[in-house]
Structure formats: C-alpha cells, structure tokens
Image 1 (cartoon, one colour):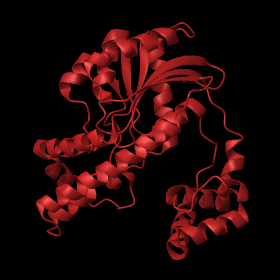
Image 2: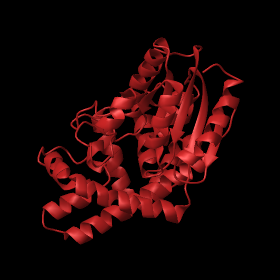
Image 3: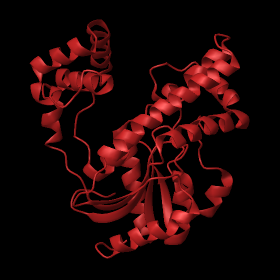
Image 4: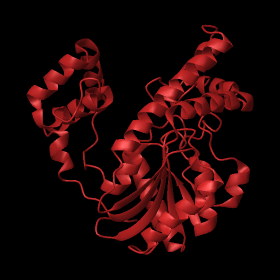
Length: 321
C-alpha cells in the first residue's frame, strides 16, 4: 500500500464519457506493459456491465484490468473506499514491474489519488438524513446561507447549487464539530507523479457520440440489465441507482415512458453528464509540480498515438515510469 512519502508514478487517461478512454488505455497498456485501473465511480459495480460500457472480454484478454465490477450494487462505494482499493492496486502493479494506468471519468476519484482525502470520521446515518431533509426544506440558497453562518470557510468554496457537497459539508460539521476546510488541511497524499492524457473532443461531436453510445447500449441489453437491478428492490439512495439510464429505463419498464421517450431522456442525461465532466477536466485537472497534462481535442484514434507517446517520453525524462 502506498502512503505519504512513498514516491511512484502513474499514467492517467481521463475525459468525459464516450471520448475514447478505454481504447487509448488499451493501446497504452500494450505499449507500456501497463495494468489498467478503473477510476469510474459506476464501473466498479458488478451489476452495471452494459450501462457503464465496461471493457468487454476481448479487451480484458489483451491487458490486465483492475477494479471493474468488483462491488455489489447493494454496497455504497465511496471515494475513500475506492481510493483504498486503487492505492493497493497501484502498489501491486508497481511490485509486478508494470505501469499503473489510472483510467476513468470520475474527477473526484482521480483527485483522491493525487491529493489524498481528508481523514474525516464516518458520519452517522441519522445526521446524513437530517442534512438531506434540511436541504430539501430550505433549498440550495438558504441552506448555503445556513452553512455559511456555521462554517464560512467551507461555504466560501461551495456554490448554492452544489447540493451534494453542501450536504456533505453540513453533515461533517454536525458530526465532528469541525468544518471540511479544516479537515482538508490535515490530509496527506502519497508522492505521486502523473502524466495525464485528457481527451476533450469538440462538444457537439462528443454529444453525438454520447447519443450513439446509448443506442449501442440498448442493442446490447441495457433494458434487461436495468430490469435485473431494479428487481433487487435496492434503496434509491444507493449510488448505483443514480447510474445513467437507470431512472429512464425504470420509467420505461414501469410503463410511465415510451421507449422512444426513455431513450431520448437517457441520451439527454448522458450529454449533461458529459458536459459536467468536460468542464471539470478542462479546469480542475491542471498542470502542477506533480501532474503533467496533455489535452487531446478529439476522440481517441490510433492516429493520435505518436503525439501521446511523445508526451509520455518527455514525462519519462523527469520521472522513471
């Protein structure tokens, strides 16, 4: 397990959904002797093979893949839980003499590896429920104002519309008596150097790719996969129930939407998610002392490999991969 002070390096392949991350990761894994480590918050779930476009058997046979389909849908895999698994896989990959390739579209997960996570104690379920109830009653703006009175330092870094992080900040404050900003000053991170390749195709092209991808998922059995998951009767608050397509296909299966309307709604949800990812990776994963970033402004194709390998060779001059 890698801890603070232990130096290693990773290659990151990141970007929004449908940008070609899996294809690039596979090409890099074969060329670099790499192991692909999943950094997508939904691809960890065993129940979501089709709806998350998990790598198919042919890809799995070409290079080692880790942390795909390893968590049951009934479990809530937090960023902290995933990070612990990912750091163990990075260490095991290094011990085997292979190159760790961190691949996915969940920015929080990638940042958790690079920067570590604040050592916040577990929050009781009662306080989580109270925070959600209060937010629903007050609304985003008033909830933000209430948090600002109690913890102005944390609130200053959050927008009134950032529901998930506002609730998290409030519940942590109530549970520990200390704000998230204060907890973050106590976090430590392993000394990781990263070469990050970020795929950012033109937005309109990306949205078209998202639409086509969901149609392909439908052809591969997305409806049956959603039906099997929903038949388990899991709580709607579990992370897996928020996977793209689950809500819309659930409405189709329940007779509340036509197939055409459900597909269109799921495509729209996917485009909106891709837009958020696009913005995050453009602005949040920046060049720094520990991260060298290459932005590729198109979907992955093999014609891009010379540029990408040149970038990695330059990275190799500063840190041993």
